[in-house]
Image 1: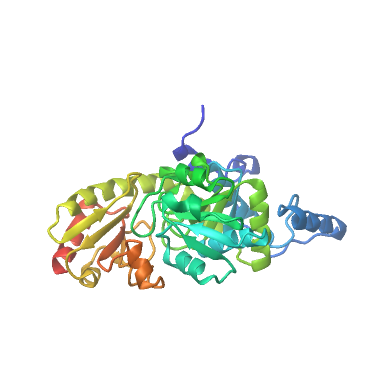
Image 2 (image 1 turned 60 degrees about the vertical axis):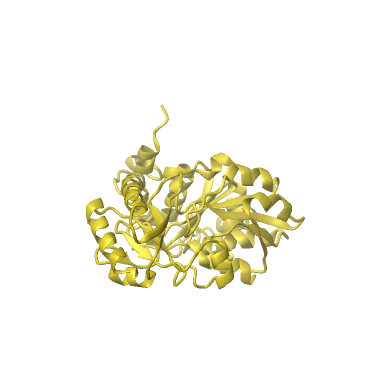
Length: 372
């Protein structure tokens, strides 16, 4: 019998622990790994240079780390991929994915708005040598060029929670690889690889870590693509710290419980928000999840200043509920016309629902809405 995701989340990356005689995954903090056989080490470095993979003993922390590899293996298993590559942050993961396309002579990217503000800025500014064409989902095929190396999207999208049919985008992209940012849904609610996405990216800082105390990024993909991403990670230095890898692996074990519990609370809050006199619109994805977006009739800044239980802060996916005004923070770096064109209005609020009691959260939301 195939184990459920809930069971695999507990055991992924830990299958060998009993044979090792330990219960908790080992934390390896080494930056370098001694060896008396430099000829053998040279062979492993040649292997990494050729394939991006490293067999046998580690050599140096920027090439690989056993603790980080456990997290990578676990996330790949949960997303249904052969491999995964972890990075210092979600933006480091985005950067490496873009550089992988550039390295293969494909500098053009087709992207669907909205996406995270910093991703939008990186694409629009061309900081990494890429050129972007922003397209609606139905226009992706016509936006492709011979030098298109990637089609990039988020679904549900940050911060409007707009959903895109992944399978339709994959069909429209043809031979061009599709990268889906799955940070908001997590593999608990959605596995884009099942619909043909070649890359699935997470800001691991969010739900994968789950406690607001660790930063990281990760891309699930096939072995060959993982090799390219590891070579870029080695060259650019965007490695995930082993302690972060340890904490993210630990976070995965409770991921299904946290996401499902927060999603149930979010669904209840959505129903109440839809009937609130000071709320003009509520956005909640069909896939569900712990994220809510809504637009207020009054002053959104007054709402942010009035919450007392809910944490007024950027980011999401923590055990405590977070609320923010995207036009002021997460998407401030996006040009105003582009921001509004993507549905990020000045009255839009994004809330990441945590594990608090629904009645306590509603009491705080209701009094804050009345204040605005």
